[in-house]
Image 1 (cartoon, rainbow, N blue to C red):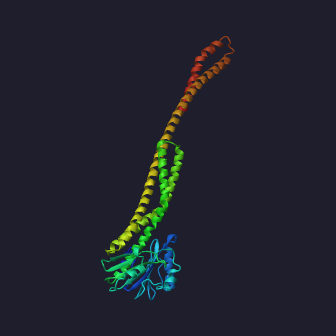
Image 2: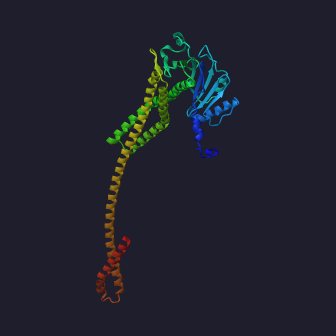
Image 3: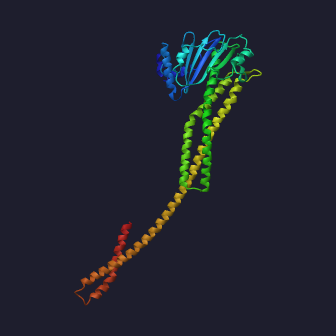
Length: 419
């Protein structure tokens, strides 16, 4: 069996390992978790990988340079490191009973030291508390103390095996709060549930990154649409010069290309993250509790309009780009037709001038024959001077022959030049 490795695909091990990342280690209630998610921005995933290595070295561990996922045992708690394309997450898991679900300092000082130099900007920070099965649900007073009453989301998940409570608001400490009540979760189900809930929130926030960009650039798209409409009208009505219209269309196309380059990745990422959020939402097995909004209500109420706004923005840009291309093509066709007419007129003018030149050449040729004949006859007269009695007769007799010879010479010369 040693030879089996020789036939393995170079990515076989990496692909097999990929199926085991993006998960939380098994834990049981009662348990508290804290997750920090940072957007890496231009620094890229490499900065997160370097930070993961630095954290591991600080703890006396070794991570591979391309590590995307790692679980580090910190003694009283565990740290889960995850690196994605655009963001990285740091999840601290601490099992054990607690009185206050969201008490400060639970994960210090280890968390403070690890997060002090993490790369990127925080896009989401969440504190999570999981109560064990058999615990009485928090009363109204407790919920009002922990969450904003009018924003409270309360519903069953995992087909009734757990209950979720949150308002998804930022608290003064900068964290959101998520309270879970175990109602029959087994083995890996607590970790899977927390992972799905966090992925739902993380992907939702990443999807919403496209909304401010679309809102900020929408006035630019509206301005370009109005300008293109005016240029198209000018093309159809011939109210301005074609070269100036082409210059303006070129500038407008360049602006569109800039907007497309600036937004294409973000808009496509928004669609991808939104779909991932909706996929996670479907797997949660949400059950409604009368009087409260559910996770599905909260997510779809804002995520769907935001994604549709981004889709509409992208569609407007694509449509505007296509219309600009059509208008440019129409104008170029008109310019090509005008150039073709100019070339035709120029060729006709050249043909007329050529015919005039030919006639002039024929006239000059005739005059040249006459001049040559005149000088040739005069030369014969000089030669016949001794016989002055017959000089005039000789000159008269030579005229036809000389004229015919000069004409034949000129004709052959012209034929040679034409050939």
